[in-house]
Image: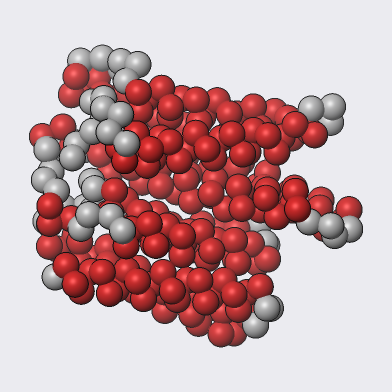
Length: 256
């Protein structure tokens, strides 16, 4: 099973990257076809993890990265059909490929156990809210980098700025909901809503940085600073999602 998971993960990552390349080249038909193929491989991985382990695969970092990769396609569909932003596809596909590449190098789920703290009705909505939020935040970060290095016309810059704002505006309620659900869950398990655990602190820092970004965007005088908070916010997000567990920083959220 381990070899099968690795192969599916690698194929999905490569297909996402190729899809992103076709989007960049404006080859829409093969881009969307490959996007669909990559998503099917991605969902197959989620399904295999679910059936193999007998629980929703949100526990190990491998499982989380596999699921967040699928969230990039779901988030893009929202931006495309609701906000009429088809141009964002390449950013979402690129991020999905990076996330799936990260999953390839992570421990596969057979080596993880579902500890009692994770057996709660709040577990799935908490993680789901954060994964949707993080997928949108990651795409907004890539667009921000494109905006900063782009030498295109001011009109194009305005489109990129609006895309960044639209993604964070959608991401922020999910991030807020994830934090609130996590507090309720913590009170159920540990008897308190907030313990200043290291992962809680970084989640709050991430939330605060994106909140400041939203205020900067809506304030003409402060708008020039908004890119700083997108970059800092994403850096805090990476620490929250990956850094704390990867570098053994401890805390009650370390389940490995």
